[in-house]
Image (cartoon, rainbow, N blue to C red):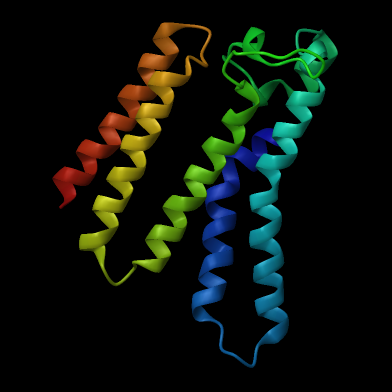
Length: 165
């Protein structure tokens, strides 16, 4: 379920936002469904963050890895704050929210600026630059190689946008 929601958040947001833009004012039920769907999808990262925070002590246990391990696979779980302990470490439990809300913002920008691609590209680039900054500063990943791959991937997205302009 967790991996499925991570992989499909783009599709769900696109479906919900497309519903907003194509429905007419008389189609109340469809508008309500689109709103509930959009709100529900965007509440998932909060749920995942709370789940990681509450289970901080159990994250290395095999049972926990099997059930919710996809939320923190490859991340430094030693950086998770324990609820009873103050921690200066980066909060890995924020990563699912940052990851999914960033994807949601891409969809919002794409749908809202559909008729203005000359504004879409700079907005997407700015979002990617902010995300690269987050990835570089956060020190979330267990290996530097994984961090380099994530940053390089974002940089390639920016280059693709520049080439497409």
